[in-house]
Length: 497
Image 1 (cartoon, rainbow, N blue to C red):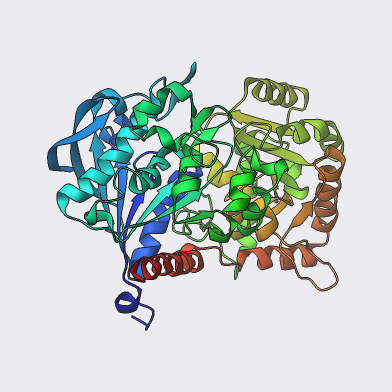
Image 2: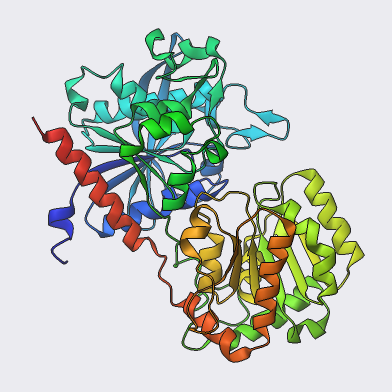
């Protein structure tokens, strides 16, 4: 190992997240919490993960063993008992699973179709306290506890209040990562006692948020440092347009807020090894991509003539945030351009219904699959020529990174991580890896798509653009280095007299 390897880069870190791939997942948070620890371990960090023991974990095929029984956790004026089980990731990172059947043995992680679970505050206050108490009971003095999103926002608050004078945690720093500021963990003021925090934490500089309490704000206020998932998003959330009411406190703490771009897991998303594809390919030999395009056209029921025309793909949560209104606003124009459109996703019923109607209106041109299908997502990524990401806001985004790897040219709105990862292609210099638009308007989106489809007919230029994207490195390696630097700075600061 090099001189930045295990000896000089060792730091003891506990990752706390409410979802971790492959154990339990609803979104991109799970991908980060599942991939980053392995990258950190390869750099020499000593990393462990903490996760609730959901029903989804129990139903998996993971090997688990109980390592602690009867952990006493005080929540809402009573003492709840927890067991702790242990498992491992494929990279050998230990995963501690906090078991409490009445809180976590449920069909879903956070909510049902009717709404959020009524006791989410109790559930994640229990998880946060249990993780700290387990560390102390097991005698494991983590140097950094890396907390993710509102579900773990109470951890920095607990360490700054309840455990402030506890010598066991004297050398423990906290890092809090905001994956999406739209999810704020807001609960009624009357439930402050459920958290177990002292009443003096409820004020505008504490966890008070417009008369309620916010667990996201708890993480922002009480952590030693913060990150978010791209440099541009770290700037955007300090503005009224993107801060969603948190911009003031984020501006105040901007000195400890860092934007670190998420990485993409190229062991999963790689056209050279992807088992879901009809044919595999890479940047040195991308010609086989046409085989995957033909297979996608057949699978989606598109007109076979589209093999000689551009095919546009989109896989996303069907919501306003993901730009579905922009897409619906230009579908008629896209159909008139004689391009193919393949869409996979689920979300808001109004968007689902509108896209189904579009598929009925334009058979052979527009194909829509409502739901989640991992295999189809990979085949769209490989078989499409152009990938659409017209998000209103996008903290980081991973699909545009996957698209680049697969030689599927992204058309994105210039916001958040999309702005940081996509550079407008310049036909003259042959530099750049995609196409961008700025104003959140259907016309601007359509113009960017037209720039892409116009270039598509110039096969030499298009292949240069594809290769540019396929040769980009958005793996976790560079981002993990930055996180490790930040961990070590926190440890050094804690050690100063």
